[in-house]
Image 1 (tube, rainbow, N blue to C red):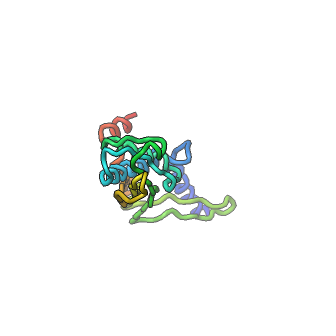
Image 2: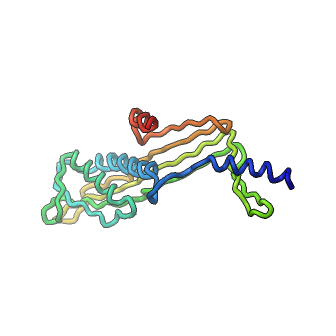
Image 3: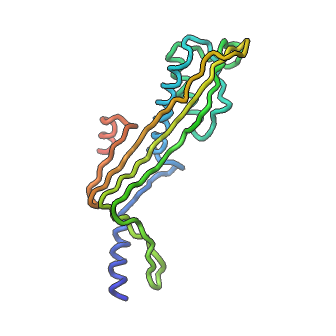
Length: 200
């Protein structure tokens, strides 16, 4: 019994030193940045295929979800950059741009060479989860956005242009080698800002 308990307690102590998620909101800042960065990139690609210099009413009825408002704002920003004027009613517009989202979410992937976390029973005390033992591990969080749009004439209702599907991708990838060596790569925060954040 003693031979079993001592190694198990050592595992528990090691597990207590690992914190994988810290947030006071429903999602971490990293998760929010992944989705918004992907939305920005998809919005840029989408607007580039729509008519410039138009007076636009943006129909957002088919673009909703947790990050829908951000996506709409990103697309409107890109339309404005292309010389469009955005108006609040169809009566004031010459073009309707109807938006839709095929994706606005996150993917998570984990590749592990080592021992995954296990649930071990401990006599008289219950069970504990052992930490992951990673000889080599790659954990990837990916933001994915896919937007499409159809532009039509306000007066005739006829098709003017279609844009998309336009894609935007973002990622944060964490690497672990031989349990103790770790590093990451990401494309959501400029390098100089990420460096300052890591110092604080």
